[in-house]
Length: 263
Ligand SMILES: C[S@@+](CC[C@H](N)C(=O)[O-])C[C@H]1O[C@@H](n2cnc3c(N)ncnc32)[C@H](O)[C@@H]1O
Image (cartoon, rainbow, N blue to C red; front, side, top):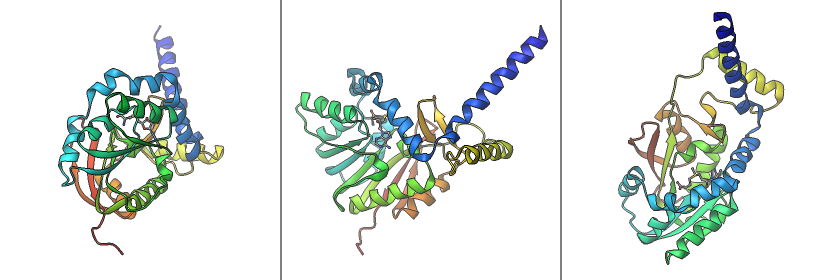
């Protein structure tokens, strides 16, 4: 009997190993599309725009991020608007909200949910990695729910921060949440094996330890330290003002500022 149990344990381990290779077999563009397809399902759009999600409103850690900056009204760009859970209370607080999402159905439902409550929000269907729009427009750019971590590769995250910096007014703030590491780092052998598999399949050649497919639904990069995200944000042209702990130990916040001086 113990031989069979051992075999079963080995098969489970092999299954986990094979599953963990899914994140390296896709190129960065495929990883984004993989996440987009998950969010675009009817079930996901309904979940993120349903009454119970909208009724939760802003979470305490999101309110704390907003409280930490002087701007209490003005124009606010919300990256990953979903069905409007944050957009609605933010519009009610007096912000002119523009919500971005790469799922058209989410943007549509966010607008409808706001309109049903007598509020108006603008929507853009875009991948926020390629954020495109007029410069120096927003007082605040907000990215909650650890969505900073949803962007594959360091290079793309730096590019996104550069675009966010461009969208902000001088002295404007970027408030974001990211995922910090849940478990131990993969071993050096595991990292090397994943990189080799990525190379053999011409997949995610930019694989970094911390890259995972969360719940096999979406790409997430778990940061091993505050310094790692700080270096990306600063390379993208924003100053990190402070880090903010959250009741959810794995979801940390960071307050960033665009220099008030132009040029
Ligand atoms: C976890 S849900 C959060 C929705 C909403 N912020 C909330 O908390 O209720 C993430 C949302 O971000 C969108 N999203 C994820 N990655 C994105 C990307 N790269 N560009 C644009 N939207 C993205 C998804 O489609 C989804 O609507």
